[in-house]
Picture 1 (spheres, rainbow, N blue to C red):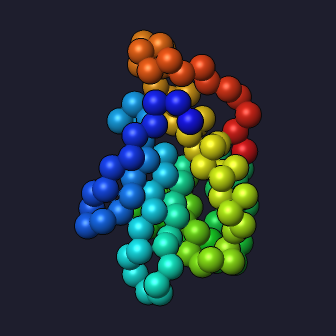
Picture 2 (spheres, helix red, strand yellow):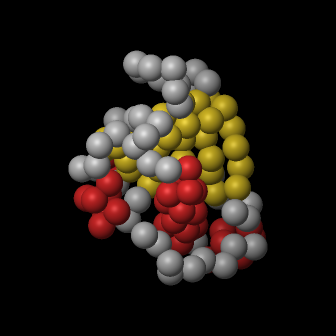
Length: 112
């Protein structure tokens, strides 16, 4: 993923951004010892994923079509990678043409 930045903020959450806009968050907040991974989704992916066991609409971000994988068996590592790639594409496509050009980003229309 081109021009991605990673920062640690909000009490230790790993936050991934493109052009200053967040597309994925990983944290250890709440119950359990495992990481919870949240990411931006398409409308269709949000409606499907939010109903799956181990996945919930992301706290504070559900209205923007984000989900959070709550349990280690909620989604395979490969599926998480596919969805995070799609989240990157969704957010990158929302950047202005000038921002994309500056960052050297060519957007695709693959989304999930």
